[in-house]
Image 1 (cartoon, helix red, strand yellow):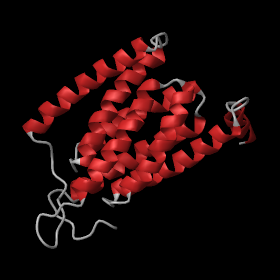
Image 2 (image 1 turned 120 degrees about the vertical axis):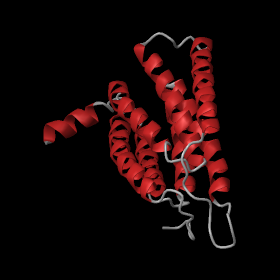
Image 3 (image 1 turned 180 degrees about the vertical axis):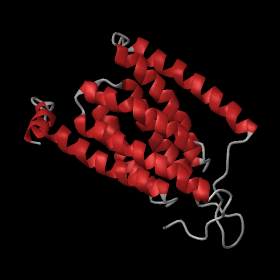
Length: 212
């Protein structure tokens, strides 16, 4: 076990202490955000805003521009999702979890393609398209952009995108030396699987409370 901890902390040699502390705080609030999302709890958004705000700064420092854009986008979409989730279908019930319509699928495809083009443009503009991680980062950015949009709209399929993107992100962050973040994405994968099951059980049911 000691060898594992030695390996983990060896990844942070030479890294400023404030970045390590910020990463751990961001991971904690990111974990809480995904947990609240699984429970269909409105606190998914304020906790997510704290986490994404921290990671915008960290990812800028590490040069992961695609993931930095993801978190900036998450920040904005959390504001939008906070508004959508609080809308009511009647006096006592909030909007329910639903599945994607054909219109949603078409918009998801457009958003995915637009995101890929945007991230490629950012990498080329900053002359950072010089590693295989840039290509993976471009893919995960597009996946997560669609997933966040679907979550804000309370669509069941958002979990499918989170699961795929989380699985890809684990080895990416390990390679970059962000061990705590990699562990976070591993936990995210597990929670996302249970989140999909929980949301499927509540499909088309209008909740009376958003604090569960």
